[in-house]
Length: 337
Image 1 (cartoon, rainbow, N blue to C red):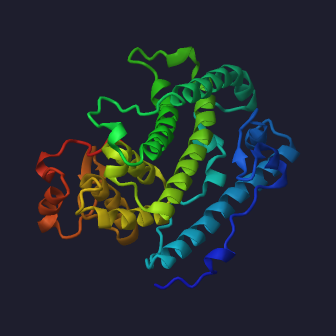
Image 2 (cartoon, rainbow, N blue to C red; image 1 turned 90 degrees about the horizontal axis):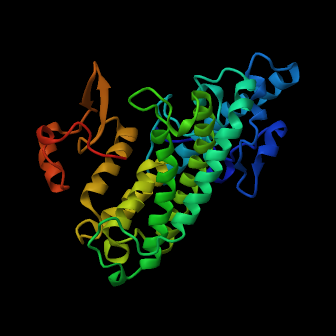
């Protein structure tokens, strides 16, 4: 069905309510949880004023989601894709996704008093992580993990370094969720209590969303200026890292733009075919309900099963053409991302 809503330039994501604006800073309204006081109204001990402010904030979340869905549909229409997004398809922009809520962030934490008790230790670990990550990433020029690539032979080594640094910053933040999982003995890692872990993860999640958004913006600028980063320009490692930025965002329209930028380079060997296939499937599935290369799975009855596939008889041939093994030979999980 053809999109008939407002024009793309007429759709604006609503600003946060005044009661929460102090937590948003800068031109991009980057969110910083601070002392988490914005969340007081979500807990039983809240005052009437705090509950009212929380209700304003949660109403803004709903409005953000609705407007973002309109905006995505309009962007897809501009790209020639007319689709009705599923009701459970999440498209909230970073402005809203940066803000943690008790439902999304906490299971152990049930009161504001627990947040206040957990925050000093969580903030210390978080601030140390950010400082050490920035210092480590600043010295990574030309670094590749066990790679035979001659970085100096690339035509755009500076761009390669930018892409690698951007994705590694995102990965370091993401790794916090693994590092803070209890060990085999059930003991918390990093010496943190379960409540401290949840507050730390809430801090990290806000930053993770911001870094993801900045990475998408930077990569979008590169594509607009010079097209998709070619392997001959940035090397295969950085080219796959660029793909990783696109793969991990929830911006479906951007992912479609990336596919269209990658496609002409496939036969030239300037794009990893496997990368293209693994990005194609989630975009195709979101817009048609089917995948083409069998890289998407769902858990059903304790088993990992492929999502519906278009033209199943030709599946293994398509996979072989994109450097993927036959379905019967694949492991339990196609990707580590």
